[in-house]
Image 1 (cartoon, helix red, strand yellow):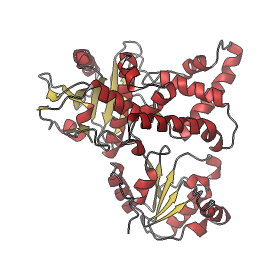
Image 2: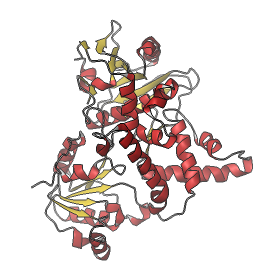
Image 3: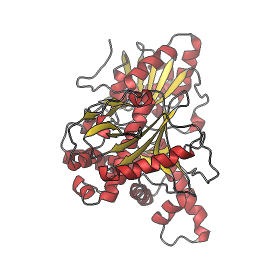
Image 4: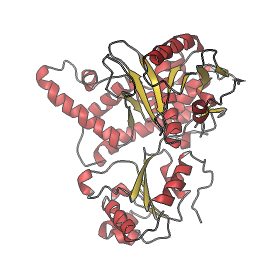
Length: 426
C-alpha cells in the first residue's frame, strides 16, 4: 500500500517515476529542499527510511552509519529520504540492484549533491537520476492547460478566447513561487517562508553541505548579484565586480576561485540552473554565445533575496519582465522534461539575434519561443523570431510568443503562435 500523504497534489514527474521504476532497480530524485520530493516519493513507496528525522534522534541515520544494510531491508519500493546524509547508501543500493533483476526496489531522494569521493560507483544502468523542481503553474492550478507543448509541435492548436490575467496576479505568482507549502497561503505568508528558506541556506546549508567554512556575507552578496542579474548572461567577472569592491588584477584570481566555489555550492544545493546555449543545426558565420544563462530554480528565490514584493514588480516593469521570463523558463523546463525534451536559449554575440527558449524533443525537432510580459511587445518578438527563422539551416517546427498579459490563444497569419503562460501545459 502506497504511503501517499493526505492532501498530496499530483506532480508531472509522477508518471516518469512510475515508468522508471519499471526499468531500473532504483531511482534517485534530486532537487531543492521543500520542492516536494519526499511527498512525491511517498506516493510511489511502500516503506520509508528517514535519515534526517530529528523526532527519533536520527536513529535510522545512526543505524545506516553502522551498517547500511540495516536500513535497506523494508518493503519495496523503499524510500530512503535524504540519502546523501550517509553517502555509502548509494554504493550499497547499486550493489543490491546488481544481485538480481528485480526492478523498482529503491527510491532515493536528495536535496544536495554529496562529495564525489565518497561515492565509488556511478550507478549507471542501475540507478536512474531524476531532477525535480518546484511546481509549475499547471501543477498548482494556476494554468488552465488549454494548450500543450505537444499541441504546438503537432500543429493542433486552435484559436480560443481566454480570461484575462491581471498584472497584479502575475506579480503574485512570481513572488509566491511554486513551493507546495506556499500554494494555498497568503502572498505575505509565502514571502516570509521563502525569506526564511534563504536565511537557512546562509546560516547552515553552505557549510553543512561539505563541512567547509564559507563567508556568509560574501555568499549573500553573490546571491544578491545573481538575483540582480536574473534571466541575463552574466559571466563570473560580472559577479566578482558585484561582490568585491575595487578588485585589482592581483586579487582577481583569488576572487574568481571564491565565486566558482560558491556557485558550485549553489548548484549542489539545486538552487540555481544553467540554461545552456543552443548551438547546433544553425548555420552561422557569426559568434554564437556559449555562456549559460543563469536562473534561480524558482523566481521567488530572487525576489526574496532582493525583498521584491508584487507592488515593487508592478512599479519596475523592467525587473518584472526579467522575472516573468524566469517564471516562464521554470515552467517550460518542467513541461519539456516531462515529455523527454530539453530547453536551451539561443543568441549570437555579433548580430544580437536572441531567442529566449529553444525546446528540442528527442527526435531533434525543436520549437523557438520568445517571452514578453506585455502584448505591446508582440511585434518585436515576432520580428526577432523571423530573423532567427531566416538564419536557421533546419527550420523550427513551431515558433511562439508567450505573453503575460494576453487573453487568447492565437495562430497568426504568419504561422506564429501567441499565448499566455497561464494557458500552457506539457
